Length: 190
Image (cartoon, rainbow, N blue to C red; front, side, top):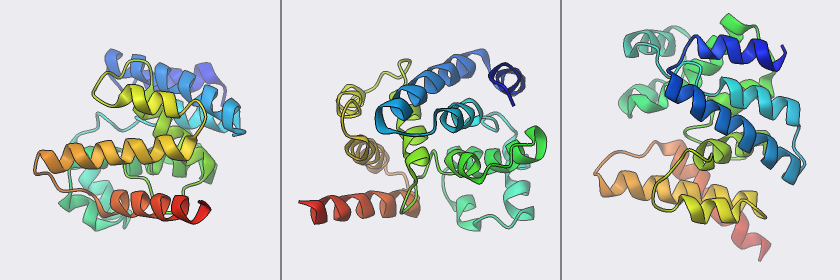
């Protein structure tokens, strides 16, 4: 699927504001893929489709999580997480994308997971640092992403976990596990 066709499909599913965000994620993902030796075509495709299900009704997403035997613990946590795994499912079903690496990058762009692939890291970080984002800590992550993708991922996860903790919100277990895995691996390298 070419870029224009993919963008057209996505634009039909999201708001104009989210479309501008998506374009920022695409540009950032391409930069990160080039910088860290990732597959630029897969990075572009995953970035284009990463928020495909963002504006689907919560009830529809809940039904898909249940009917597709996705992890039911998703239903206990913030529904903001749902659009990622549901999006991966719908991108395959509705857009015909079958590349497992691309679908996994979409699936894990909100929660992360242990042993993330390079593409998954690129999409996660690109979504976090795209130029339209403005919140405390994002500039630090952008700076780190210039030379250290894992470091940027650790910072973004730490910031997200801290944000949720300060608001007395639950943190999805995969997010904690991803952070811990990266921290433990970073210590082993020292």
